Length: 380
Image (spheres, rainbow, N blue to C red):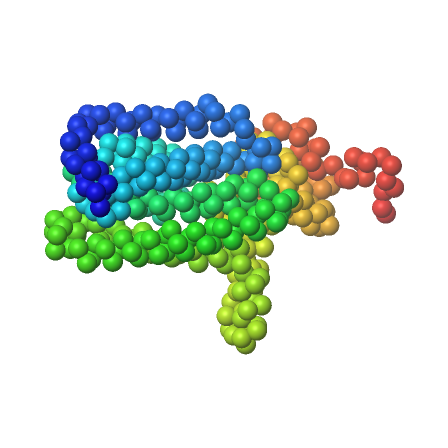
């Protein structure tokens, strides 16, 4: 208790940073993550990520992983050096805690802009999450109160470490090449998710409601919907990651307890996930495989894509090839020549204007396989 009082008196005598310093630190944090994304992380992108054209997602998740790791260590430092934060979530102030919130706000601001410009169609819920977090933390920075509440809320970053490692392993192919390590990461993600997200956010919501009499009414009305939103998003993410990582054990468990209805639903979800994996549709925001410019020239299945290889085999059996022209995929019989396409009015009834300028490319794509491989005997 004596140590706690000493810390309280020490914090009371600290010279608080001005708002100008706050804005400088937020801007510095935002610029730091931008610099990492544009100059440092591109040097360490694995080839498996480049092959799937997921470079942006890899850099974005790496930045998130760095923020989660640094924040978790910083939180432990603040709670160890300033234990008063654990007992008074409203009034205790420390410059270290204030700097931590500035650092996190800078990261969330950069990540919001990064996702908005690069992947806003698939990241809408994360954009909403970042707006909510920036708003709640902004209140703590502006008022210099509720720093303890903000720090406890940042403990969710402990789970984010394993969540981001899990995603990095998925997009880089390490989930398949190192299944034991990936399984361990999934288990740690599951455990820390329950402790540092589900339980922690429920505790923060309960604390807010139970202390509403001592809070500013406007602040309470602003914070409560934000917390409810984050709670709902966390439960949805928990259900999604659990189904992805533990669907097979859950199916066996349902069969064991004769819950056939739930077992069938889980098996259907597994089938959809496998189909999405084969077609290249990512199961996480931003994981969709976008065709690179070189892929658009030679059609689906280039760059060694498994899904494209299967589709190409099916087209080969039908005697067809695909050609990408002006963003449109056109299926042509293999023995059809450009002159025949012109006379027929073009594939699908429309002849793209650029088709006539690509005679050599079209010939190489629509040439019979026997002509490409002279060793093969032509079938009658």
